[in-house]
Amino acid sequence: MGMEIHVQLRTRSKLFCGCPVKTDAPPNSCVCEVCLGHPGALPVLNRQALELSIRAGLALHCEIASITQWDRKSYFYPDLPKGYQISQYDQPVAQNGFFEFEVAGTLKKVRIRRAHLEEDAGKNIHDTPGCTLVDLNRAGTPLLEIVTEPDIETSEQAYVFCSELQRLMMHFGLSEASMQKGQMRFEPNVNLVITRDGIEYKTPIAEVKNINSFRFVRDAIAFEAQRQRREWESDNGYLLGQRPNENRGWNSERGVTEFQRGKEGAEDYRYFPDPDLPAIEISNELCERFHADLPERPVAIRRRFIAEYGLTPSDAEKIISDRGTASLFERVVALGAPGGITGKQFVNVWSSLANSKGVPIAELEISPVHLAELAKVTENGTINKSAVGKIAEAMLDSDESPTVLAEKLGLVQMRDVAATEAWVDRALSQNPKAVAEAVSDSKKAGAAAGFLRGQVMKLSRGTADPKIVGELLELKLREHR
Image 1 (cartoon, rainbow, N blue to C red):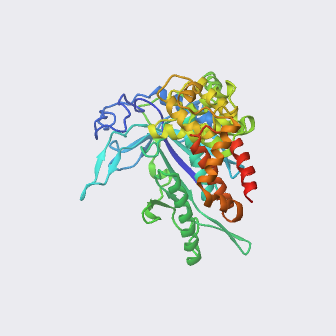
Image 2 (cartoon, one colour; image 1 turned 90 degrees about the vertical axis):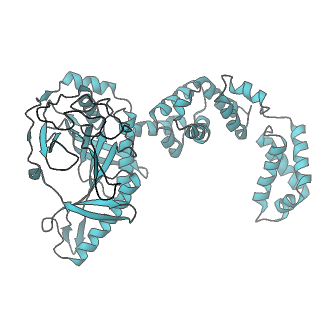
Image 3 (cartoon, rainbow, N blue to C red; image 1 turned 45 degrees about the horizontal axis):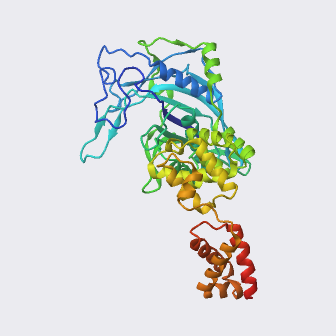
């Protein structure tokens, strides 16, 4: 597969006019003469959009053009009122790059053919029976179209590629990249290379249009590969060059791709330079300055978090999913917090609280000093792991330190052996069935012992030291054998 990806750049206004970029405005309320294609309305380039496209090209290891120009891509569609799209054809802003990501622990490299800047079309809405409505609020929104070489070999690789590319766009502040809002759309170009009896056969290319879900990308590719295989096996002429390439759509309800139209070639669009927009010269000094400002790439951050802080790959993956959260994690560890414990608290405790509020962890506005202290008092045994959630929840509404809150909530861990032994004896006497199973039923022994530990922690209101509890329980149960 090769991929074509449309990324809506993070600008306040559109690419060639001053209309605001809004996803929640009433239909056709963010438009002007330029958006609507009125005669005589002239486009003026949005500088920020061009700069973001240059930064995106550098993030993708691309060569940045010294001169880039604008072309008219002609086609007729209801959501394109001018009858053409302002795009880039033979002089894109960036080309000849690559993107690296990891699949099942193996580094995968996909070459980037080009990344060009263009305006988005409007949106056709098919919710009203008997007619199609057109909302032109999106018309003119700056899009970066990224085109890869056909280096993706499986549907799983495509799934990871898309999710990692989204992360890169968000991490570098290039796009909000919300799939639900249509700010990132994927179009896999799929065909097969089949070898039989030493002869290589290639099927026609099918481009599956406008997919806005990573799972749908994976499912559409998997279906399309099977469909093409069946077509080839039943039709000797189903070969690249002998049958036309196709544009297809993904029907997620039926789980199939559906034919839309024949796939256009460059000649069908009648590209020619836009007479209203001058070519743009991009200086080496500008590129060097932007390159120096690029943050660390997510794939490198993940590797470093695993190597330096002892995070599991899964925990590192979740923490770096938000740039602000990854930065906050590093500030907390820099204050002396243990990396592994901090990572677990970010993933298991803070992420749950953040999700309940609909924000990333970095926007909970908890002091890094207090986050570090919570990890430290967990490590040194002042509180146990079961108390962390209660203290963290209290920290959301208090400026007091985790230690003070633990004392107020009665969650400071008890290390008094005598007191713990009393709780253990009480738990054993109150649960004779569990004691019997722990002692004499090999199939239920583990679950019974875990139940008894839980009862001790319940009696102690979470203040008992789990290590002391475990040691005393083991000793007491041995006496019952």
